[in-house]
Amino acid sequence: AQKITQTQPGMFVQEKEAVTLDCTYDTSDPSYGLFWYKQPSSGEMIFLIYQGSYDQQNATEGRYSLNFQKARKSANLVISASQLGDSAMYFCAMRGAGSWGKLQFGAGTQVVVTP
Amino acid sequence: KAGVTQTPRYLIKTRGQQVTLSCSPISGHRSVSWYQQTPGQGLQFLFEYFSETQRNKGNFPGRFSGRQFSNSRSEMNVSTLELGDSALYLCASSLAMPPAETQYFGPGTRLLVL
Image (tube, rainbow over all chains, first blue to last red; front, side, top):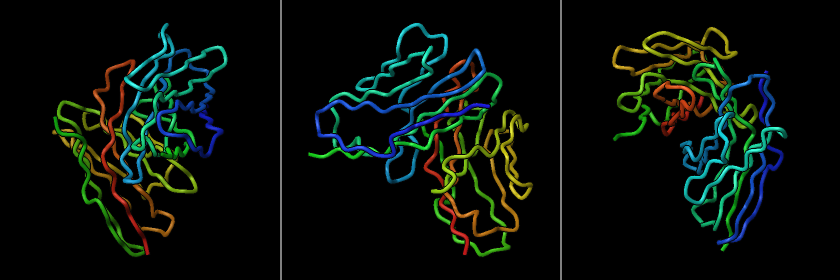
């Protein structure tokens, strides 16, 4: 069985500061994908970044980077230079090999960016 | 390119009724997945369709069903609604090309069952 754990229910961060959101996962699949999504209060899930289990380098997308530590089974999201518009719920998700179309989500972390 | 669209955006039903939600994927995407999001259970996978075939199913009762049409549009149906079915229903589409298979989500349908 696959499991995603996000231990930080919520956090405040000041504008222009960096923030790290924790995500640990558990799977027996040798091949899997890790994703981060952002969900503003409007409800839509916005894809941020992807990391494959066999990728040698950590993924980066603009201000988002993924700190992938395979041995520790962690995939932390780092948001650099936070902006007010970054206030949202952030979800870590995983797709295992053969899990057609199924993402397993963590409970999420609520981020509030303050001026 | 247009994103994933879902209709209706909001819906109010009463217990015992049935409801049909619609999802139009991004052009060219052949995989459509459905999720239920509630404050208590979080995001839970309902099912996934690819080329009109259900390839994967979550742990939901048979009252939840879906289908996909030849143009990749998908519908999900919930029969005999219960209060606990009140949720945000999200649909996501992907190219279904391993290994990434990134899913792109629609705005969701908020269902309230009274």
